[in-house]
Amino acid sequence: MTETDEQARQRREQGPEREQGPERERGPEQGREQGTESETEQDREDAGRLRRLNAWRTAERSLARLSSDLPLGERLAGLAAEAGTVTALDRPSDFYGDGVVADLEERIAGLLGTEAAAFFPTGTMAQQVALRCWAGRTGNPAVALHPLAHPEVHERGALESLSGLRTVHPTHEPRLPTAQEVRDFPEPFGTLMLELPLRDAGFVLPTWDELEAVVAAARERDAVVHFDGARLWECAPHFGRELPEIAALADSVYVSFYKTLGGISGAALAGTASLVEEARTWRHRYGGQLFQQFPAAIAALIGLDRELPRLPSYVAQARMVAGALAEGFAAAGAGWFRVHPEPPHTHQFQVWLPYGADVLTEAAVRQAEETGVALFRAWHPAPSGPPGLSFTEVTVGRAGLEWTARDVRDAVGEFMKRLA
Image (cartoon, rainbow, N blue to C red; front, side, top):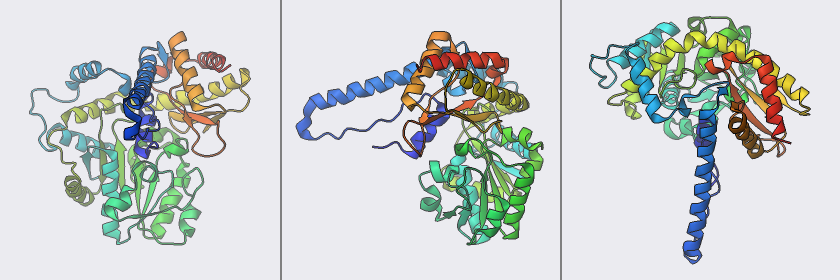
């Protein structure tokens, strides 16, 4: 059984997740011995995953500490300790979306400058509902988006299977479409969806002028514009604009609470009051009207208070880290390598090297275990091209602010030693 898109997404988001290996087909003639072999293989996979996770958790230095690295008890204790900073603890817990969940929705609408916002348990659901609503309103089921966009790569064809929508691609270049590509696309579409940043292309963004031009081109075609803003929070430094001005370009915006803000889960869909009201109806139909969601809502509010003000410093530090990585690879005689984009557009970017993913991940784990420095996390095979080329995603967060350029270069040298 090959790895599914959703399993791949989870592995990339969470870092050291268990990689899915080929499933052995067993017939009756293979008996108990084959079953024991499979169990042993599973044990090895589990042990490898736990080893990687422990290496990330216990490293003394890291460019970012992911919330998914923390043990359950530590996460619960942290949530309980900080909950009182964002809400009154003697109030009733939420009931089907009122209370602290409603507070979060109001906060998001205010931050983005929209009329309303609705909380969703997942971003996948929020985005599918948004695109379904727009198809009904425009009368056109075609959604123009990039072939690397989240619905195309990580949602198992849900737009077509659940909503009868059809996707079209104005460009296949590893960037968002240009205004000319949108304007000249040979068939009509009702919605243009732009993922900001385009994660699978390397967390890339257009310039502000390019973004304005693309939106204007869509309007010329009487199409609405939806922003996949799972990582919209960190786009402001690149655009040199505040969040309300960015969100105002689109007819609807989806934002995530766990990717950048370190929340537990959840997302929000923001837009006009009428769109959000319709989205709430579809949220219920999709099974997203959960009885209580206060832990996720509280974690999101904490993330907004704690991480959102720091994101400009993370983006600035990521640019320094990317430059120092390139210097370190050159000094270590790495030969071919690529830091992409350079400089980074957000606090996340890719690093590419001509080695197998397993070899690179093992070197990263050994470095964390032996030196206490976690420079890289899991590596992944290139999705296309010749074998032996791999990439990793680098995130610079609060823990990475203390790193100097020399620290980065030295860490690259230690990493390259473990590839020798």
